[in-house]
Image (cartoon, rainbow, N blue to C red; front, side):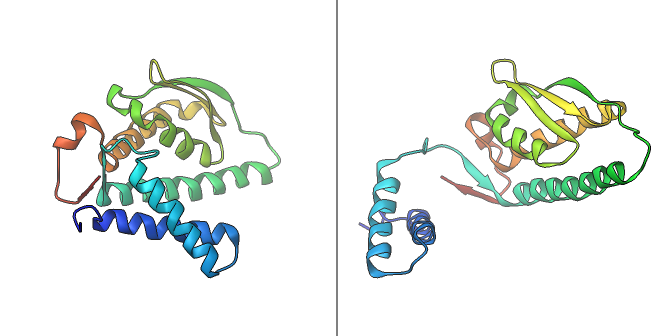
Length: 175
């Protein structure tokens, strides 16, 4: 019976129950009990999970660090653009093909890129794995393409799926 209730499943049930109670805004016996029931049904029905994949902590932290640095630097840059009287922007839209093994992470890349001011994903083609980005500074095109590729590599390393799972570096939490 304990094999049925793995540590990961129990942790997921606790996290989902906490989210349930948080959404209701009141800690009560009824909310906690209902949260446990809903979380247990979700976990054991397999809703939303493919049963494949893993999380690698070190690359995930590196990915989050890079996105945080991007957020701070681009916020300062956009604020500087707003506060200076002269417009130094040269806006444009570019197509950035992401590596083929990164297509499973297109949504994560879209969110990470759009989160930072000055750059936004205006379209994503999942068939070709191409992101269309609006840049505030078109002269930074090559730098942006290289940066998107670095984000894609970190996303693949942090959240491997399929064939990427065989490259285990010892910091993985399997599904």
